[in-house]
Length: 339
Image (cartoon, rainbow, N blue to C red; front, side):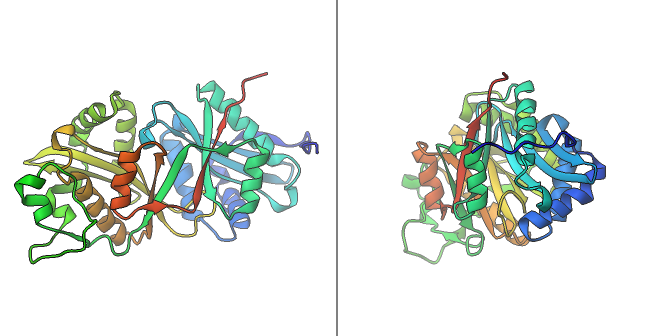
């Protein structure tokens, strides 16, 4: 079966602020609900960081007929090379099936090649048959990553046993929620350390911790996420756990209503790290506990992250904290080389 040919009158170009209303309308028709705030955030993010966003529109004589939005993953989920995440796409109903989506994706591939990006990543719920069929037509494959998630409700106030955090023989291990016993000295996990919102003054300490954990200097990525947190704290939730005033660990997450098939606000953990000097003392659990509390206040219902299948230690930590495999699947497609 041959791919439909896009009429020559169709032009593929970068999106501009003037396209906002048209993008919102196309997206609302595609998703069955309006996501005006989400679209506004994505377009605003591209204006703030143009080198990290690929946003294209397709137009003909009648106006905008399709759009596609992507964002560069520079260091999220422990990634050691950049990838382009396909966040959103839509084609006006009367132009579907005419190759507009393929033309937009080809433009995105060309942009990725110019920026030395080797692959496109995305995700969708396994029940979203039309989107999955479209991914298949574009030669996406299942990625070797697991998407895990957890409901926020019920975790923000989850206590831990005092003896899990204070007794000398347990001082060097991560807090366990596996037991069912309780006592009169229960505390919230986030009470284990001074967990607070990140500030600009934390940048060097976070970069140092990240370098120790990842083995790479990712100052550029960390700095960009810091800037995002300072500009839009209601969307990004970034935390630091301190011991005697010294940062011992950090967590970066963002809350969004978007991507394919999301029907409620979801927070995505991009990065989580604890200095080896403070490992297995509960700081990771303290950060998660505070994250749940913050998300509960923002009325975000779920939190998710992406973990390599073979990172059994991280998966074990997250499963112990209440995470489980999500209904969303992760997909990847290598960028085709230029002809």
